[in-house]
Image (cartoon, rainbow, N blue to C red):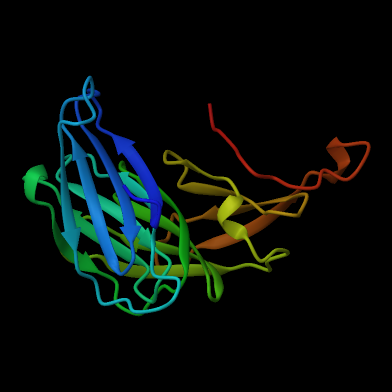
Amino acid sequence: TNGASIPGGAIINADGTKLFAVWTSGSTKYISYVYNLTSTTMSKNTSLSTSSTTDYDNFSRVKIDSSENYLFITDTGKDGVHSIDISNPLSASLADTLVGNIDLAYNLEYDETNEVLIVQARNPNDMHIVDVSDPTNMVLKGNVSYSSLSGNDSLVGLALDSARKLAFYGMYQSTSILIINYSDLDNPTSTTFDLTSLYSTNAGNVCSMAIF
């Protein structure tokens, strides 16, 4: 890519044979498919048109579905989530977009067991549940609002426990973890776990998490 390009993330498939990267250059968005990981020159770029037209209109995060036929991508424009058909990875195409429903979307996690996305957006500060059982017709379900303590929530951690249908969100410039229960997709609930008691001084930021 050139110097004006904005990287949006990359993901590799389950057997390690395919790499997909998403990025934005000017007003154009691209899916890069690298099909020979021993030689990064063996790649194919596909440009995509979306309906977002804001100053913050860039791909942000990317996940691949369990069938490996679709990519799910967050978008910092007015259309917060895209589904991309990669069944023919040499010619990726836009399958669906949640038009105007999620604004300034950044973090993204995919629960392949329950076929849902957890999407963190900044306008307003919400965690959204998206049903992607049909990637060509994504359905926005419930959401949980949270109080942001920072203007840059894209730097925080987001992790899932699919078995218990729980999402854990580390709040930037905060000592708290937001725990979201999405057992009921239409009516998710949340609670906050304060980490202050675990530290002798202020913890500062919760920027990454992992579930074992």
